[in-house]
Image (cartoon, one colour):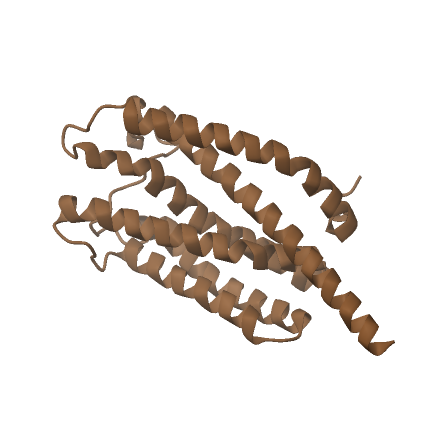
Length: 242
């Protein structure tokens, strides 16, 4: 069995229909367990106080915001190389989700930053690249809406996605490229010394799993909607030509 078989809309709809209930239930369980554990059963930080608990929303949303764009990059490249319509529709479906996660990350970062830094906003490398990433999300969605021909829109947005990927990478590795800025280092890292304390670590992992599940669930739902919408438009076009 080839992975490319699921680029067929009919097979994609069958597989996604089977996966969706499982993903939705897993997402709900992980979100409830992670957020309740994190917000109600972990102590305040000795320096940050109760504001530390914003990591249970800020860190997962920031991770999804960046990786959503990278997912869009992969599916856009698939469209440009293999011309599979489901991949282009998946990228289109993911964009509003990534934009929303970017807004959540920016807002929660501002809420955390005000008591920690004394300001709601700073032109820190990571914050600035994240803001630019959000503008790319808006531009991507606007371009899909502005171009009437879906194949042309898919091509143009794919090129935009490739360009915007630079800022997705900068958002992730800004502290590596520029060894300065207010933003703290990674909360989770392969280097155990850089991880948050164990008391915050495990509920944070569960929250991340919940956000990943939420992303998968929403992308599948929205992609299914895009496939149905494309089918409907094709049927309407045929009837007009008949």
